[in-house]
Length: 610
Image (cartoon, rainbow, N blue to C red; front, side, top):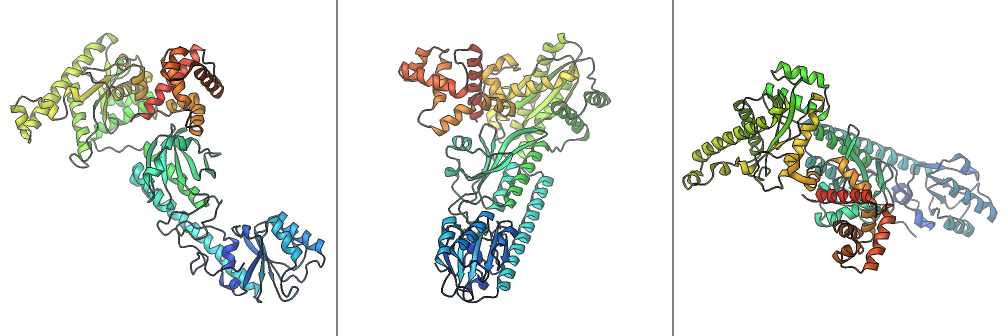
């Protein structure tokens, strides 16, 4: 076949796209001007034209294979090749064994009208591209052109890699949010990018101009089929490049970039679908691996960064509370610095408290400053309530929605009284603030008509949650009380009761698991207990054995009742249970094993619930 001109190359010999391959393919080499001058014709092995060319080697001896390392395009006039059929077969076999990219034979000196049929047949059997040059061509022009192409592509790759490092360094310094990091990754690669947690729930995505609905449809099942070998690896079966996201030894998600293993590539930001990257079966270039790893590290770093604009004293309060929550400072240092602020934490009964609104700040209400202002108001209200109740505590905002406090009480007997006093004082502060804002604002008519002013201001007891953890006797245990309080506050958002203070018994197991749904260890537990079954269901969507397991456990392990709940005959239900037991390698008659699976199911529901 005659090779057409072009081949998706720019005048410089490299693609204009943002994704550049380091090595050209045989097809691309044949499209270069010095090669086209020789009127090339592929006589065998055209299925191997997508092989990359690592270098070009000129040879006129039959035993050249011993000097090659694989990936070379061999140029020859054939004057030194064997004259017998067996020798030609052996020559082709040696080249194929060493892994050369192809063989180019210039006609005119040894072979006039064409290469020997035995050579073409041997090359076709081994899938080795064999090309005739029907017009004399100086080999030096070919080697110069190809080597320049390779070096130029390597420099392009280097420049692109440098751009990646600079772009994500800037994002890290700026404290960019996850959505911006994902957007930049998609823009730089021209490929769809998805961030998911350990339970395969999507945390963020950018479809890179493609259909978001198609990208995310049935994501969890699709994601479970993506199983790369390593922390950063490409899964050719699914066409996704994947890396794990985490910091400080705690993984919390995966970042995925879709690089199709065949077919068309996205034509975005200059990516050339017909260029050297559009190779069926090829993996992503090294540059994309660097890109996704830098994006993942930026996401991990961003999760650790928390910016604050409070006063110095409040910043120290926040630093100390954060240190207790994150184990980032020794407790002795926390106690020393707290004492310097007038908050004595040693030999005290400590209780963690979290205060937050039931609903997050409504999107677009009050502009971008509304959320931080709302949190500052709440933080000031908590501080004022602590002063009115005459309580000693570390207190500050601990995230974008919650204000935390670590109460330091003289003894355990004072716990209930102190919490009640704090809740009552906070209610008064919020009612007063709500009334003032309502009278001075456009909602004065609500106050006149008898409407609850605190609800109009978004600060009513019914619109606010106060949660307290279990009291502890030492600063080393304070983190447990603070974390428990934060978890209770999150779970209580689903509780419609207007309780003065929420404690752990109020939220129940389902609520507790809901508030823990973002905890990587809980997601890991779900994957360990149910991962094999979820993967089976992903491969067999018509069976959905998870629903069978749910019916069995929700009916108290009563198989007859479970079969009725699942709308299955008892033999069919029993057979499905047996299959579930084999897949999960558990004894479903075991109370302990069933309890663990039931908790995992509840946790899975919590993870899947927004």
